[in-house]
Structures are given as C-alpha cells and as structure tokens.
Length: 287
Image 1 (cartoon, helix red, strand yellow):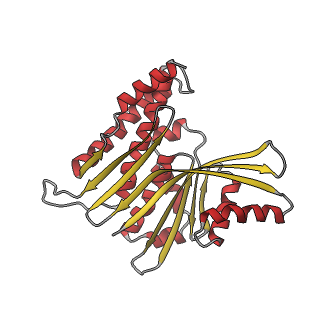
Image 2: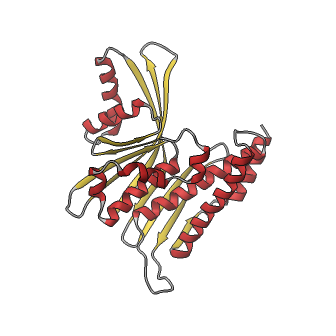
Image 3: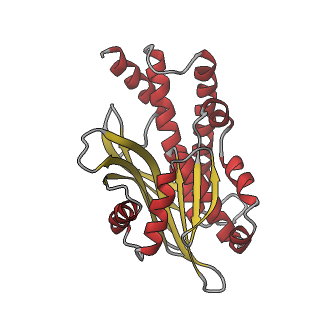
C-alpha cells in the first residue's frame, strides 16, 4: 500500500486583542492518518500528544489495527482506547513523565482523551473538521468562534515538521528532523524488505516505519536529557537517570531488531546515542 504522513510540532500563542501579555501558550504534536479500509471506506485519524515519540507510537497502533483489518472496532468501541494508549507507553514514561497526555480524533470526532490536554486543541480540531482539510484556515475559524462568544483574541501559530514518512509496496522512507540546543539537522532512513533465514520476506508497513521513527526520536531526546543531567542540569534525579539508561538500552535493542529484520539505509549516518549524551553534557557544562 501507499502511505504518507508527517508529524507537526506546534505552538499556539493566544492573546486577548489589543493586549501585549500572552494569555495562553499551547504546545502539541500532531499527526494525521488517512486511509481506506477493506470496504473502501475513507478514514481520517488525528493523533495529538505531549511528546513526539508517544504521538507516533499511538499512531502506529492505529495503523496496526488497519493492517489487521480491525480498524472498524476502534471507531465503535471507544473503551479499547485506554488500553491502546497505555500499551503504547514505555514504563519509563509512565514512571517519570507525570504530564503525559494524548488525544485521538476520527473524522472530526474526539474519540479518546487522556491526561490534561488543553481544551483549545479540541476547538482547533472541531474548526479543522469544518474547514475541509484546510488546517491553516482552522485558526481563523477559531478566532471567529471566540469573537462570537464575546472574546476577541489573536492566535499566533508556529509549526515545524518533525517527521515525514512515505511508504510504498517494498520500502518505506522516513525523514527525521532534529531541533534542539545541539543542532538543527535531518537524517533519513529507508527500510527495504529482505528475506529472513526462514525464507519469509516481511513487508515494510506504515506501522513499522512509525515505530522505527519513534524509537529514534525517543532515543535522541532521552540521550539529550541524560547528557544534561550528567552536567548537573535539568530535573532528572539519580533514579530517573539510572532508569533512563536502561530505557535507552531497550530503545537501542528495538532499533537493532529492525536492522536485523529489514535492510535499512541511512543518510547521513544514523544518530549515535552515546555521542549525543557526551555532546549534550559538554554543551550544558559550557553554559
């Protein structure tokens, strides 16, 4: 199948009209999934979450359901979503990230919410559903909705692409865009099917590409935070650092498994987590 998606890192600044002071700052990651099921019914899922890797992993769970032919169950039985979200999270995030949240929309309807996402995001998605896929137009629609309610506001929107994925029948391309205090850079990976020892060839699927990308983004972020902690900065205590190293080892094994199962090409070289820890430590020691 052919599949395309991208992850948008967003920041909304909401101000009262004529007032310089910022009223609200809303940060989110947003990923859109569009596909047709085996009955040729079109679906549009929108996934939002606090972190990039958790947003992508939750999206991967949706695509896994689509690939198994069980996507219709998720649109009807909303009780399943709590387990889907929980099972997509690492123990590390569950133990050390108290601010986790996620939202899922299906064809404009909010079908899952966890944690404490800002209510403004729900309004934006309702506006997007009424703007016929013109996402930029939803900002103006939201401003008009506030004005109608007697609250004249100005919404400033910043969006940066964090991930681009394109999947064809025999390969998938993933472009990961890195933006942090150390660098602004892009690295690309292409996954190809290859024959295993048992003679079976596993397909390159959308969920595979999403999960592989999530592993790298989580590893990069975790390595950056661990380097910051080694420099005596940030808010990771000893327990969080020790468990963070264990989680980084798990992510590394996950990537190794992808590389053993599929033919993976990188351009430029793939990120080295130990080097990111070292570079991050050096950077934060210098400031």
